[in-house]
Amino acid sequence: VFAATPLNQMTAFGKNKRADAAAASGEGKMLTPPRTLSAVSKLYDVDGDGILSEAERALRELDTENEGHLSNQKALQIMEQQLALQHQLFSMKRVLIGLVAFTIILALSNLGTAFAAASLAKDTSVSQPQSENNSIAPTL
Image 1 (cartoon, rainbow, N blue to C red):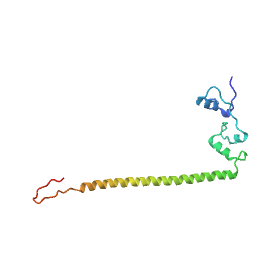
Image 2 (tube, rainbow, N blue to C red):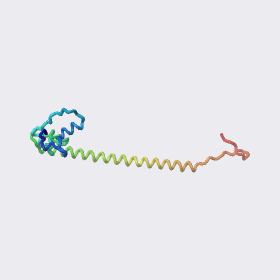
Image 3 (cartoon, rainbow, N blue to C red):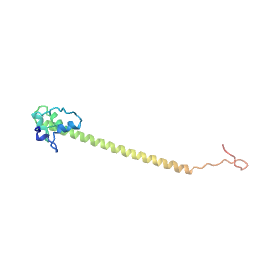
Image 4 (cartoon, rainbow, N blue to C red):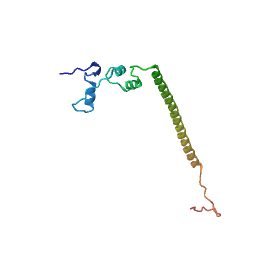
């Protein structure tokens, strides 16, 4: 005997999403009965699967008056938050690009210093001190 499952809770294989999740998590045979969404929460269930996604839940939490829709003030608040986040992200990208450029300049200057030290080491020669009788004295 098959239990009736609402169409918005069916997966591609015809099984209940909550049952699939419980089976995947290794839960035993006892399944908790599926919780139903309130009438207001159902308005935020855009895909109609009976479960609020993270974005749907965020919108639902912004509806503090439980009206089933967001006011213009709430929509403005969301847009201001998004624009502030975009500005912050752009600033962080600029700082990151600056740090990468500074790191490349430091690496190139380190490489140049190493080549300069190597060429100076080649040009340097050790001269032997000469004694009065023009014989080469061993140096210590």
